[in-house]
Image (cartoon, rainbow, N blue to C red; front, side, top):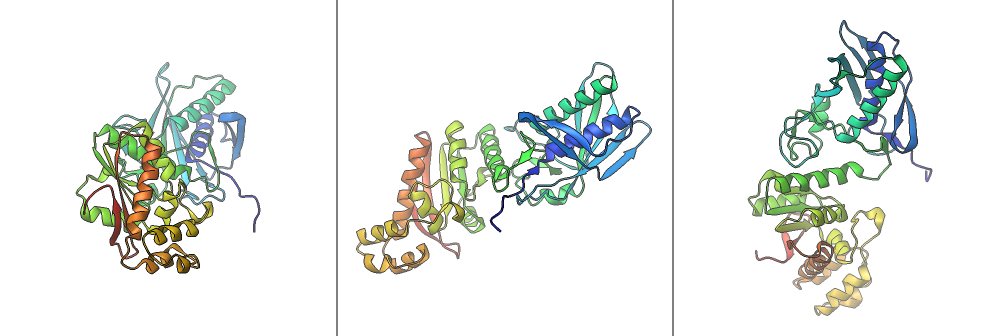
Length: 354
């Protein structure tokens, strides 16, 4: 307990390792096992092979994704790369195999119809196949098909469908390294969600801290699926993305505790980043004529909200959270904030009317 968290490898790094091993085997060599690859920022990594298959005109290698101590839906998945020869001078092209999705909506780094193998992983694959080609004295021309065992099922646990990536997972990773609890995949989904919404010209986005809050928005607003952004605790990531690509309107919903943290200026709403300032919230209640003394002895935001009774404390939280959001966005987006209780009822709001 309390030890250093173990880093892991992205799906892009695993795909690059599998592709390099398959390329070497395609050109008459043995599958290098482990296979060592070069990643950005001067990092090298060695990967054991979990699968090797040699065919008449192609070779396939597989690597088990190790996400380290980061919670990741793809941890333990087998990332496969099949390499087949291509005409001289054609370079390297990419295909989506089973379990890898295809892009169907604009706004992402890839065009519609492309396999969901992001530019970072493509560059890693190309660099390492290039290294292998030079070592072997051959051209790097080939077709690389990336697949993920059980990827379609795993993709159902991600936001890919909302982003217009159908049929499987995305192959991700700019550095090749997964930093434990960096939530980089979640931040990436938020950014890509904003990109897709902007490309579609959606004027109104809705972001929520969790399922209950999103359900409340869905009951009240008839928005396209791509308008919903699963913000979670990453308020800062959402607002940073919206500063780059503003929407005309944003409705933001969450529970009173998380929105009280946002009202206090916090951009990471997770408990690990700190608790809401209960003394400040008690002061807000006192400003409304409530029992501030009792509130200052409360242990949770929920207790203070209960002490408020009919007083509009939830509205005060929403108003201050809206002010904090507008300060970060610095204009260009109209903002409404809804406070949602655990039963899914909207108990406080600011910036719009019921």
